[in-house]
Length: 94
Image (cartoon, rainbow, N blue to C red; front, side, top):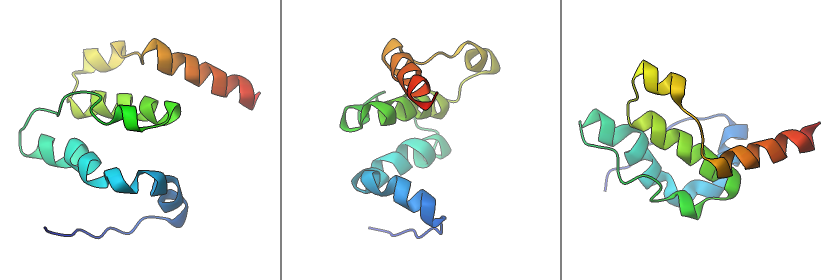
């Protein structure tokens, strides 16, 4: 198996640490599949492995990897579950 090394800021590395075991799948979903002209893998295949907040990120990533049109981007809305979680986080921040 080939190995790729990237330099990222320490704070980003700390944020990504919980997802270390999923890097290969995330890389494929974000970079390899679209570059190779392959369809994005089945949506939400890894989302169940994430926490509530992370599943919101995964939902957005899945959408972006699908190469949406401008109109689709304008009309994009996260799921009700994600929206509820985001509202909860906003209320906690206030």
